[in-house]
Image (cartoon, rainbow, N blue to C red):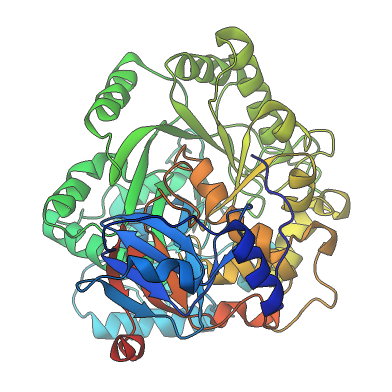
Length: 574
């Protein structure tokens, strides 16, 4: 079910002609519970891309077609939602989130978009003043470019504003943290502290910690930070769910950090507070798969089988990120030929773990960013298929920021899902001055290769990696189409040959993402018989300058036939 170029019927006459030929046949039906009328519905259904109205019974779409064809579904108790000519889309599926972490980050220092160390300091000082006391200052979102050529932070800049209060600030990608001296002291990190497995304490010429902690090095400090209470976590999740619905997200695939919180999500479900569907993976930490882990994963798969909460996936990581040189490459980094990056797993142990998980019919997500990491994962999935036999496994590689030309066609040929996050490629200073410098121009020519993966009949699924970036899909859609910033830079786009059409991008965030979790039969497009997950938005993204897609607002979000968010202006009309 590879994504393909979808035609957009821009002229009203063509839309109506298509509707007349392909609309859902109407017969005698019980009255619908909800009808959406006067809409421009982009269905993501190749047989019927556009419609004017739809009917819902309970949680299910029962008809999609023209105004005349939907009119007979109206009964005395039917709620009629007048879209006022606005665009209606399927609800978005975010294929890669860390939901509890993202929800918790909403209460921390927001550092995304800070242009300098001074701006970070200003935001931290403001937050500390608003949250007095001696407790931890936590924040997230800084990017590497603000630190100059070294691209790494130093504790002295936090010590200057927080000499006596511990602070830990996480990079936007989650792979590097920035600690002040007080935090390092409380964690017992000294000159004599060894680097943990798959982690690094960055040190100065004297061997003292600089405050930058790479990968698992961050755990040295995180382990002493007081954990939130159950009530605090529940409150954070409610806020995160509202945030997702605000942007039109109706399902997420959790890629780590939520498995041990299944009971929290289940409590929200029992109280009717779950308005996002969750597919939650178990995070398998290197260096090996154990019988105890298998037992835990099996138990969750048996317990959580419903639409709202489901298990059955396993997430692991083969490498880190380009910016901090922890992604596994086939050739040395261009900015430092002494560095190549190494897999977090021993290759043989990784392949053995993948083969065992595949034999047990779990879906596997593997984080792989470097071209060496991507190849190792593709090889492991191929070897597992050879050992266990072919099936509809839909194993996934998450991120795929760098890849060799010969490996790109393997996604289509071997049935591996390319689970990617378009906003990660946003061509700002971090991407152009740090990421592209570290990879070099030859590898950068295949950066985030969405178009070539699709051209090879690969399956593309989009997500955010929240809280790495916002859970809003709109900036990601814009980036996928333009390969430019909102200001239109760089001119012509960064690696524009890899951009995709808006129709392809929307599909990757809806039906493609649903397919990546085995949910496409019930979700991802607006077709009779599927769940009534839809959104009404403020502007027709198919008609505007694509650089304004990120200005789109969601006026109504519906999940399973239930309106979970509605803009007051739209509500007043209806």
